[in-house]
Amino acid sequence: MANSNAPFGLAPVEYLNGSKWNGQVRRYYIPSNDTNAYAIGDPVTIAGGADTRGIASVILATPGSAMLGPIVGMGGLQYGGMSGDPTNLNTTVIPATKTKAYYVLVADDPNTIFEVQEIGTGTPLSAAEVGFNANLVAATNSGYLSSWVLTNTTEAVTATLDVKLLGLSQRNPNNAFGAYAVWNVLINNHSYRVGSLGIS
Image 1 (cartoon, rainbow, N blue to C red):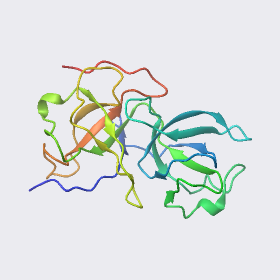
Image 2 (image 1 turned 45 degrees about the vertical axis):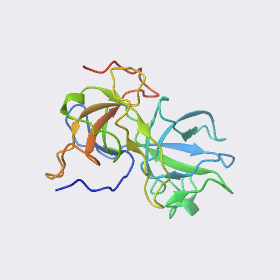
Image 3 (image 1 turned 30 degrees about the horizontal axis):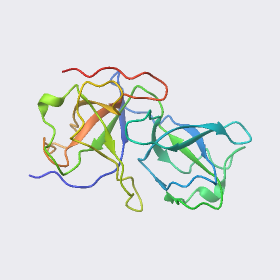
Image 4 (image 1 turned 135 degrees about the vertical axis):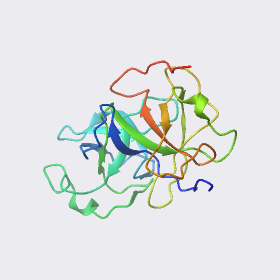
């Protein structure tokens, strides 16, 4: 059975110690003069600066640069607090042209393992690439979720590549090596930790 093409960006599933992801996140700030669109699953990185209350600002990551983690929420209990905005509760996608600032919840623990879909073009990654590092590829969101995917043209031992390939996700028994495979990855080039060489 062929893998489905349904990209979702980065989705947290567990930690390196084997425990399931517990939903812990940190709140970050996107200023109104930011010109990027954002969706759940989009990776972001530290932008430098903060809002008036000291909440650190983030910006959309670029492939090959240090990543903080993906956006996993644009609402919830964090909103409506001291620096929250309850009008953001029903936000699905943050537009590129903004009339206000936004707050997002990011899974930024460098020990978090994520699922990500492989791109459908090129030569698919294989078992031989497990342990290598690779980059992600940016794409326009679906209107609901991120469309970032894992590329299969950059796999190498290079320490500055985006993610480390840990193997295929086991949550779907039909997931298989090939186009659109869903991989488990660790952010390698992380904003809070220096990247390591891949294992060849």
